[in-house]
Image (cartoon, rainbow, N blue to C red; front, top):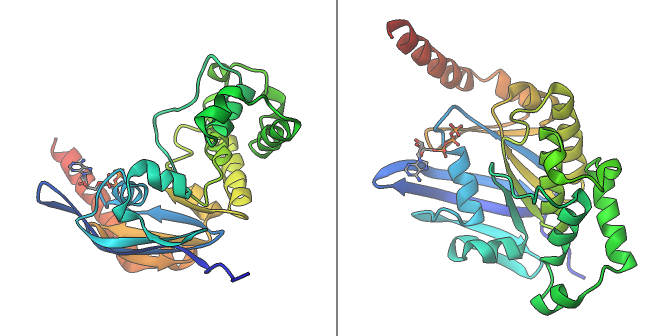
Length: 263
Ligand SMILES: Nc1ncnc2c1ncn2[C@@H]1O[C@H](COP(=O)(O)OP(=O)(O)OP(=O)(O)O)[C@@H](O)[C@H]1O
């Protein structure tokens, strides 16, 4: 058997324009298998747009996103959103996708069934193996005690973990998450960090994040974007001691302070 390439995703020279406004300008991003990468940068840097390009929600105006799928390399910029999801790139959006009136268990069960053909979904009964898969997922996301709960009754943090569990039932190789800890308590935030580290043992995760404490606590490698470009990439301590990174964050804060003081 041939060895899988260590790089799972390579975004090269990506540019995106919105009605002439250049939101991304020649961005490069290379991800290894099994890494937890944080994508940071001031507001409007282009982080979410980068995730949108990778999952096919937004078309790049130039550049390529090569995904090393189990069937070989594919340029996903040529694919549609549902095809990209089918190839193994999962995206979690801010809007919740859980069914609040169904139980936690049923939410995971439905996600598992969606992988199958319509015929199989209509007629399949839950096998012992299926049940085992759902149960393993419940343990992974820390909701085993809440399996019979209605999903709508979960706390905010628990709902986010269930959403991550739903994504995992599709067995993606790459997970794209936009601010997964927004609105969480400190305890929930830490638990989410541990969960993401666990998931990244088998899969690649990209997290767009503003919560710097969360990034400091859980990031091994960080990519900083500014004005649609790559500003700096490296370990968190290198990022923190970089003058240009400090400048773009402080510069933004200074501008915000100035406009506030003149308001
Ligand atoms: N659909 C769109 N149409 C027009 N402009 C857009 C669209 N989506 C994003 N933009 C603009 O592109 C730029 C980059 O946006 P993006 O949301 O990717 O930044 P971001 O780094 O994720 O910011 P934030 O941290 O505030 O979420 C911003 O100036 C934004 O206003």
